[in-house]
Amino acid sequence: MLQVKEIVSKSSWESFLLKSDQANFLQSWNWGQFHQSLGHKIVRIGFYQKNVLKGVALFIKITAKRGTFLEVPGGPVMSWNQNNLKYFINQAKILAKKETAKFVRLRPNAPKTPENLKLLKIAGLIASPMHLHAQTTWVLDLSQSEQDLLKNMRKNTRYNIKKAQKLGVKIKKSLELKDIDILYNLQLETVKRKDFVPFSREYFKNQLKALKNDNQIQLFKAVYKGKVLAISFIIFYGPEAVYHYSGSSSQDRHIPASYLLQWQAIKEAKNRGLKQYNFWGYTDNPKHRFYGPSLFKKGFGGHRIDYLPAHDLIINKSYWLTYFFESFRKKWRRL
Image (cartoon, rainbow, N blue to C red):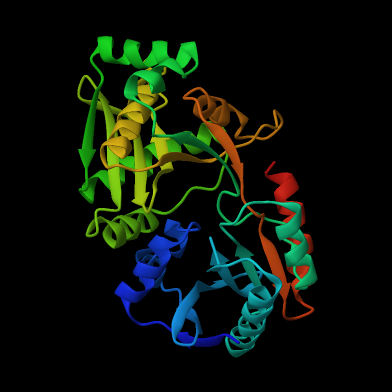
């Protein structure tokens, strides 16, 4: 029988999470701190058996126009079996009712298998109409040598890396808050080309502040003739580096700066001794608006990973208004 209590010790939380094969930055202590800085209430729950920590779940309270709900991104982190999931669901219901949330949305960092999908269904959850962070990703194995990494890339990708080097593109690292303005502005240029909802300047700045003290984040800038053509946020957590956010200039599009930037980030992850480089969101669907960026990511070599998709635990019947609204928005935004 599991027992539950709130965890207030960063060392206890991180020690458990980093030992798990489900370790991911979305359940990290600092990701919770980041959401607190945005004004979101967070609750860190630990599941114990005979005083031994067996699972964790970071709950984030989101208040939106469509109502209040709790999200558990990349979690819960625990052994996947019917009894554990049932206990988690019971605790999620208690917390949701306490916070007057009409549903709980989770996207576990567990593989998408028929067995795991069946567990979610038995537990009474339904497939969410919207994703919760990237649930299909493209991942590069970093156990290879640099020579093999280059060899296994698409020919065009390898060519563009070398071309950027010959043209004099320089990759610079930064943790300066002032460079968030560059990321924000280049993101707005990318938005015009790709048509997606941008993140706020505050969102980027608070994320950098929350992660940089533990060396979990790095900005990479691709500079050509004194001008930043591309910039990326790379998160380093547990066994992997994650290509999380980026922006690129609408000018000098013939300069393949983004290719060299990614190659430098991959080498940084390898030098840190990490197991994999996670390119984050990926799709094979040519009609998806992010199909182009997915082809770019695929060119570096690697393989696809499918995590369990987002699922919702319904607390209040008014949830169905959210369900239909999000279903329409997903279709409209071509997600």
